[in-house]
Image 1 (tube, helix red, strand yellow):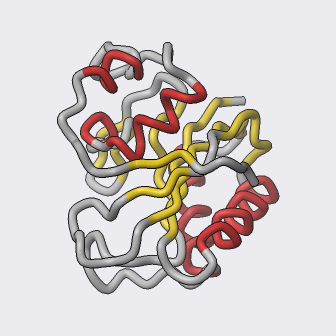
Image 2 (cartoon, rainbow, N blue to C red):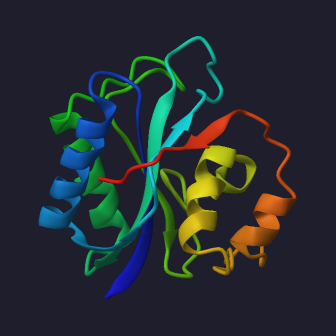
Length: 163
């Protein structure tokens, strides 16, 4: 079993429902959720002219290897209506692998840890909530340290309920 840290995001349709459905499909196909962050309302990153996102980080216990996870994620995103028409565009669901335990994977189409996570408030805030002492295996800093050194100032607001 491997702990896999996953970021979920949605800004089209019923975002909370999209995330709930994604979690159900992840549990059915990839592994049981061990812990989940609160939901966060976040300003769009990269392409600002779009609706705010709802984001959440979950940690699952999985027997899948990283390649299997990537394939399953693609199937789930497609099933939930994800269209890849523009970089950083609006989407019904976005599922990113943040960490695969402490492994470092550097392949053309698969980079773990996620190469941008340490630059993004919408990723670090939910990670701070659930695993502040987790050490980024490539940067050798805790989530708390990464958050303290963050320069991203886009608004991220914790919502008062979980799913």
